Image 1 (cartoon, rainbow, N blue to C red):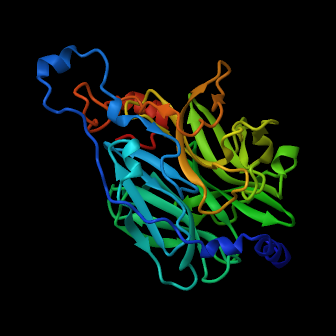
Image 2: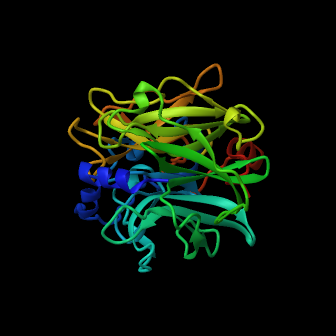
Image 3: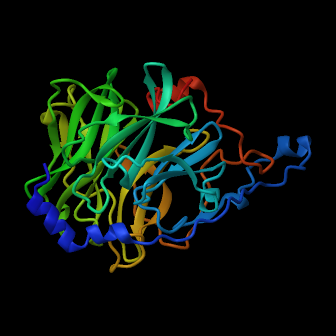
Length: 392
């Protein structure tokens, strides 16, 4: 639990003042498409997709902290921290198009217990009581302070990431908890969240009854504790857990060190035992897996997504362009492809230098140069890659 003393210390350090930051103007939607007049026979004999319109550079756009991105049914959907009382989402058939996509308000809340300081939205397609729905887990609290931040969950009315949504509940409304992420493992659902205990910010896992309710009497097990030198720059922090499942293995990245420093970075665990609620089931890697360069600072609070054709794995994250910037509106949205090592672990590489051209995710454009209507990934391969999360 985060103590009053620690919360006051955080506010004195400047975190609370971030709440008052102003944000850049939001731009209108602008979609891109290639030449859709190409003849069928030309399209059939084309050897490579036309991708010029999909090329982008990082950052994709400014003020894009704590991003979450999903590719679903022919479109990318994106949320980032707003610090306001509104949850907004961008939608685009191309990754590059998210930069100009109009942010749409999909949820607002005036309830004084959860009205304000919206952080770190994540939306997951999970099987609920009424079939597959999108579950939006986000951090919110009370006006004028960051002391009461806690996780809340929304449920979509249908199978559309943009809702409409209904409020379902708060996981732990009376204690400080942030950065929720779901883990589905062996037909059970878990939540991983971050919480201060003493002078350490930890990642903790608990089992769930459904996507908005903790299972009664489930243990809450600490699975990351900031102990290594690279986890304690500025403050002792591990937060922002994100699950990555690949070829039957389950990894968890997390953000380490204080976000107000240029040393914010990604660490990684792997689930090597059968019970996620046992700390001994998690193996911690002793070196960071994604960290600052001379051009990108504080890269972290990431998410994962797969290219439209399912052949590529991508990382989305925020970062800063200056060593002087911290956890404020300076954090900008970035995305890049990653690969896999021979031993089956992910290889994230280094943050791409701003301005370097990046080809669009594979399958984003069809042979005529048009943005693909949807992925053509076979259901069997989809099930294998996504662990049934996005397959129907």
